[in-house]
Amino acid sequence: MVNALLALGYSVKPRTTIYLDPQGHEQLLIQNGGMMAPLRHELHAGTSLYKYTDAHTQPEVYLSSGWWLERRELDRVIAFAEHRRCPEGYAMRLLGCVPPEWGSNLDLVVRVRLTCDLLALRGLANSALGKDAKGSTVIEARNDLAAWRLPQLYVPGLRDHQSGRPTGHHLRWFQREGSWQVGNSYSWIYRVTV
Image (tube, rainbow, N blue to C red; front, side, top):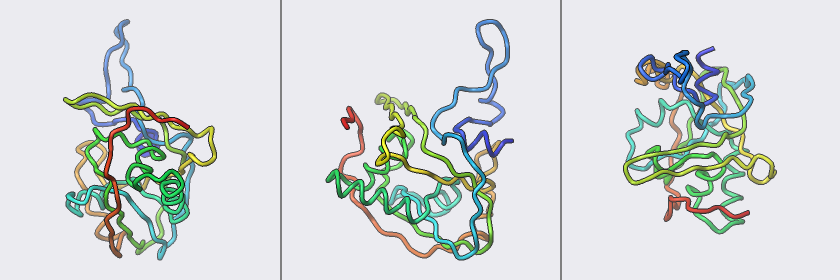
């Protein structure tokens, strides 16, 4: 149950999970980001997974994050960037609904190979809102357009769902195969036109 909530974009940390609505009833936080209608997805040992992240982030941080792409989705991001003549990181931001306020430049692609079979959740990117001291960004999922649909993977168990700290499972489940920097000369989304 917790893994499905995380994949759907809910926070399940005890101190931020419950709030009181105007009638005094306890409610879960509003969904933000995540994926729509996640389904079980089997991943086999030897499969490569990919992630866009920040080149200045430590491997311990990005390898322990549950959000990944398979090769066909990586190719979709690259093709979208080439067709739109935009940086790959920006294409990932649009297709994956990753607001810049979430703290990643998306200027590095990392590839890992699975060392064991894993069960993940797979679904289309969901709309997201990012806020920080400078402002906010809303990225609407455009799953109504085939070229904008980006299925993502959520691999549960990489971080403790209460503390958010890495569990160390990435050290056993992933073999890092490499990384390469990609363009992301602009990260902010002011208006997206189709």
